[in-house]
Image: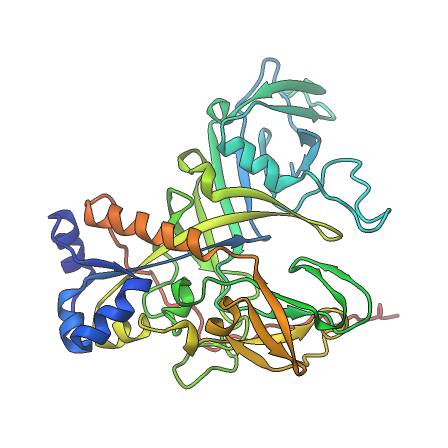
Length: 397
């Protein structure tokens, strides 16, 4: 039994497609069997919601009178990159506000940054642009200050180099002092653990060998019709995998883009990590076409079948030793408590399973209503890619 993208899209357009979430498909296959389910189900929706630091937006302001060639700029005092065309800028999610003391008085509070500006843009709030220039004959203005909102922009294009990690570390701190990280605050002596994944709902965990998700794949990006435009940075598919093919560590990533003007503020939220910095929490949904039984089987992965390695963020992570302290399944992690070093340890998630499930349901409804068609990837994500380290070298004499 096999189907094509064209056949599935025809059923979607006709309002006849059978669509289930990655949460629902597990019981459906258990009840009906893989062969029957593969014939009946057309699409499985996957999703995730959590911090995605490698995110940002390209903004175009249009030309003022007189014109300005922006060389430095700030939005609500957050610096933006202006090394592109005259009135284009790029705002990164982790950019700090000008004059933020950062960790000068440790631990820093990091109350506001790029992720918060992006959240406010999507929410339609008024923001201030302040720009400077060296001036040219064709762009004579040297300074510009104005208030704007997202509707004043010509384009607002979210362009994220690395989203949707296929799996990730479980963070712990075995030292005798509190540690502040992008995985949250880790208490001393292994008193708590944190993780960040939607587990059995997560897109690349439902497509471990990238058979349906790749450049060109249509995605639900915080409510917009986005797409995968490349493998993400630090895409590292050549990793340890369980017998079911699911990676037990970071592995694959996706580079995503979408129209910020179409996004829903519920799924675009600025984030603060005390003692570390700022980020952006983002919601992503990706449909998986049920082309055959093999692809369907991958989507039946359960939290109990997905392992994540534990890393010590007091020593092994910052020093890049590669050492791990064991592993847990997402079923164990989602229970809120595990046994670590012989004692009970509290576990909390930086990602939201409930938000991810809500996204999967929204995407399911849009597909069933014929509002979201699938697209075949232009190529497969790299399957045998390893991540290089930065080797610090001395200048040659």
